[in-house]
Length: 326
Ligand code: PBG
Image (cartoon, rainbow, N blue to C red; front, side, top):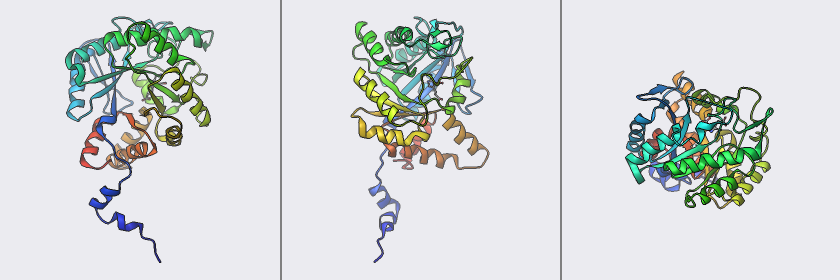
């Protein structure tokens, strides 16, 4: 007797009925880069199709997202001036703070604005914290991260997302937010963040590559899974509301494992290198860009991600609507 799984693949209707992974545009977050100045929409060379905007043009990209049904943004800032202590990261009129204000003023509750909390775009040395010699001083850095989160919340951010990988960061942010009247601002932690070469194009886009050394003393070793569960458990214990695994594609096993280990929503960040590989291989005619975008997005949802941050957010939202994903 032949067992016939093909019976349930006979046509699109039945395939749609038995599909195990359902996706929704509600789960998509689009990352946007802002730089200081006015009337800027500058193409990012390393990330074809992505741009850096000045805050006065925030509406342009937000409108575009909303047209595609994407109503969540993750904001990154590129300041004019960098210094040792990354002071523009927590300046009242810093670049992210300006962009948040512009967006919240225009859209109110129609757009959910999340901010990346980190120092690497703001420090002259490009590391994610305050240096002591050649190392990042963990505990000294915590108070700065907390200040950044509070200043984002004060500007109107709906959610903060710390990507620094310092120990104790969630507790520090939660404490700072609570003390300053932001006890209802959720924290999405980049809890399981690997020291990855997939961030290459982003560092080009944000000008945030470390000027010496690497990030391996704070970001995780790509070989480790159990350590990821430890990081996630610590952040959950400290009060994170959402846990993130980053990057996505090479870490689908980590997403799956985390789904067995937490009751929090799980996010994953399909990072710049993942985007650039698919985009450029597509442009070179080597792969079907749209098809691979759909397949990789489906794999992230299938692995257990509830939320995806991706530079393809608008295209994925369209693909979901067409039934090509979920
Ligand atoms: C900041 C940060 C990085 C990314 C998100 N937040 C860069 C890094 O850690 O070097 C990478 C995002 C991407 O590659 O798309 N720490």
